[in-house]
Image 1 (tube, one colour):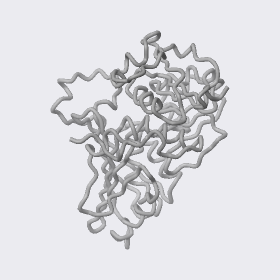
Image 2 (cartoon, rainbow, N blue to C red):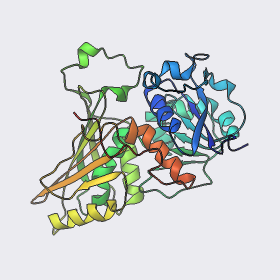
Image 3 (cartoon, rainbow, N blue to C red):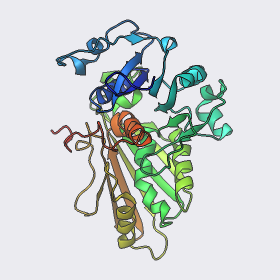
Length: 350
């Protein structure tokens, strides 16, 4: 069975009680073509889903769906969205894959294919064999691979950074050495973070200056989808905000490259991409407040001489996770890319 009696496609969410799982449930609950038929949570099993999610308290017709343990997954689902913590999906992936056409995975487990890099950044992934195929998928750049069972979405800070650099690398406009700082809100750490509110509130601090596991992901994605590789210095900082990411990349243009060349590259790369909003005017710059609550990425690039500063802002739980996963599912199933992701073009303001 591939659809419910109402004709909608059946969807399951693994790890549904976390921040990303909650966002996916909210998005799928109002999607015109999907309905949520299963939500897993090891700690909340048996508890009504709509009573757990604060965002559902005003629903006129609460769902009768209850959280289940992942091991209770049965039947067929057109799509399974995995929001499990990194390292958990590989433990059950062989069994989960038997119940679906596609697993849309937002964790880091299958973002890298190099064994040495996996061992360094995602050692849990290598502890469990998976004999199927997986595909790293950025909706705006990557081709759909229907032979791959696992569709792995990019990391939130990785994709924001890629948006700042892709047009420059795709056209070979910059020198290889690039510096990026990414600033992220507290929800990026998930519900299990041990950081106390008193430590984060009214504070701005360095989170990881070197060795962040999104760095090799960014470098690999740019090398795969552009004309040049980059040597990236990638540092992450923690913001006193619940949501949002601002990635700022500093690059050096090659000889002869002009501001007009940069503008043309960004405009050409992002024209017709419904969720990528490029600020072609130098008087406007991306900000976090205008993208929070949306699946939009605001992007800008600013040139002085040979120096180029490019910026992208996203909502880490939407464009950086749940929204991007649903965007990918829309494309895989042939639905309009914006289905279930239309928020009237407005973020939370003020």
